[in-house]
Amino acid sequence: MLTASFKKQLDYYLLDIDLNVDNELVVLFGRSGAGKTTILQLLAGLSKPADGWIKLNERTLYHQGTIHHPTQRRNIGYVFQDYALFPHMTVKKNIQYGIRDENTAESRSHINKLVDMVSIGHLQKKYPHEISGGEKQRVALVRALAYRPDLLLMDEPFSALDEESRYQCHEQVLQLKEKWQIPMILVTHNREEAEKLADRILFIENGKIVDTN
Amino acid sequence: MLLMDFSPLWLSLKIASISTAIVFLTGTFLARGIVRRQFFGKQVLEALFMLPLVLPPTVVGFGLLYLFGKNGPLGSLLLEWFNFQIIFTWYAAVIAAIVVSFPLMYQSASAAFLRYDRTLENAAYTMGASRWKVFWTISFPLAWPGLLAGLVLSFARGLGEFGATLMVAGYIPGVTDTLPLAIYFSVESGNEQQALLWVIIIVLIGFTTIYWLNNWSKKPWLNDPGKR
Image (cartoon, rainbow over all chains, first blue to last red):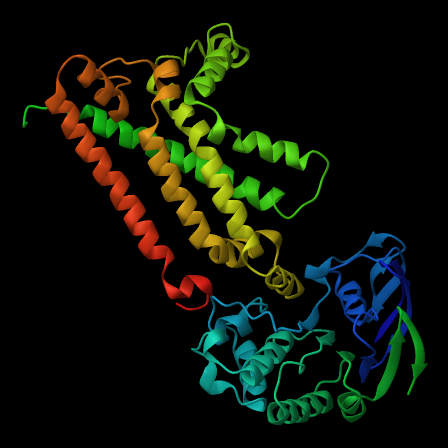
């Protein structure tokens, strides 16, 4: 469970957010520049709040100016908007990057299950530039889940995909959500996507939650 | 020809190799540490790093003589602590090569570390990687083409260094006679054949370096570090 309450002064407004996310998929919906990506960065530790606190499964990650767990120790899966796959590593190496001991039978079986679930087994030896946008998105998703995160953050993960790939990826995320009982937060500015995937939608405007659905 | 003394060639290669190794390490780590940070005095610091590129080598030599001379701030310390005088030794030539080639390495490394998307490093951090692991597995390999260009240019610059080397290391045959110095003093003593041989060798090394670098930088996968 993720609970957080934090503030940060941005260029044009004060970001002021209270979050409570159980094992569900919460969508942050709003226009570009509303502060959605910044919320994910603050949760992941890539940016520091000015005040407040962030708790994940009884662990205090941040509390009133003190970072208790830096990004490296938060155990948060993050799917970046442009996927951020490492261009000099194969798909397999990308997926294994966050795993401490990739050679144990348990790790291997866990990764194999994920890889099978999103059907990217045939891509393992390829480099990111050799695969399509939809495939990159699936690799990024598997990579973010490979080290068993306690929270999954997805920043506009489908924005660069065509209609068909987007549909397939939506189905896979819904499938993963069922099997993977962790808090998930997805950022989008596509209302149809938000309604299809979300257990709850939080409408963000100028750094504040203005409505929930 | 067979009886020729090739020590200037070996000495030059030794000096250029050592200075390049030092410049590669310091230039890479300084560029990585500084280039993406904003702090007070950054512009001044970077201007200082680049200064030897625009100064006449004699000015660099003069500065080094002042610093490392017997009465200089660093020279007197070396003399007091280790009873070692660095001026007019090949170590002084190494220092001169370091100072003149450092800007090339720093400039190449800075551009190299700005070349890739920083999100890649952030992605690695979210996956639990330490700073050290991120540097060696993400930053360094992605910056490698630019770092290698800096390394090659620094080596070539170190090999061709003349003015500052002459001022701090002098021309002592068998001790500090690097290729450029050997060329100058061969011509001065009327031994133009020997000078020509050294010129041919140094032109060949320089040409090969630039030719290889130009060809290599046109490889298509350099525009996307993943295309290997």
